[in-house]
Image (tube, rainbow, N blue to C red; front, side, top):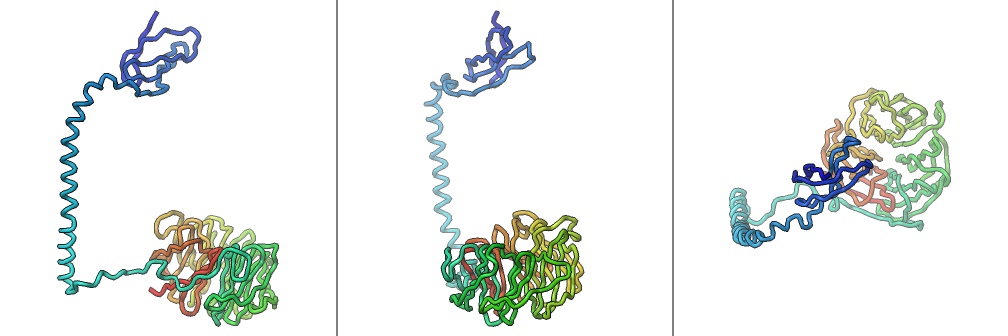
Length: 383
């Protein structure tokens, strides 16, 4: 015997025959044309919509289509007239506004000045391309500079170090261990290059690549990153079940160790730390896992932290490198570009690059040099 239920889509009555098999039988609503699963009393399952098909569902509205069209044409005409009037008045208001502004400034010809140049206007030098020949790079992630302005660029894999003059002209190249990634990279003012590989810090003659020593550390291997300080020393990131910052003087002696530098301040472990130092002896530790920068004083005491995970200005996402300029501003690179902070961690500005800044260093002119895998970029950051 036919039974009736209300369509879950439109509420119209739908006739159906009760099944005794407990399966899902479908019916079609004659009003909204939806395909419905009929209710199943045995399973306690109500009717529900399987598919909505609007074809033919509005057949009863066809006689009204011409009426809607006749009403719509005048409405569109009025709307088009309003838009045309508005567009026509824009030049009038714009001209009037410019005249008022020029009059108040006493200058009728000079455009407003840009407060900050675009990143492409900051580029002073760019060299390199993808390849394995002299002056070409496959995966350049490390960069350093000495007092003579010579630029050292290290490949992450393969152990190749290339040397350029201050204008980006290729001078020579040499190789360290080709089987281990080059983790840390720095150069002092005497032209010696320090490389963190296999957890060790080895010292090389920058002009020839000759190994001339190793930085000894009583705790053993575990160095990941390294930066040269203004007084000829080194600040290094060390990891062996603990994220330490180790400071050496110019003679290679340990003068300060900040144990569990990031994890003790954040309460969260840190397995990938990069370091930088300013001219006053402050140390900045960038934690990729913590997505933040941690500042320590010359005495090793924690001062503050800034950054944090996110995509907003001042927040970090996949941070990879850190550097401090001659004015104490902190530069941090992540997947968005390079963010600039003041020495207290307040966000200042943003530099967008073509490519990712894996390595950063400043020269004596306070120009920023960036290693971006297949090229090196020098930027003016004076303002």
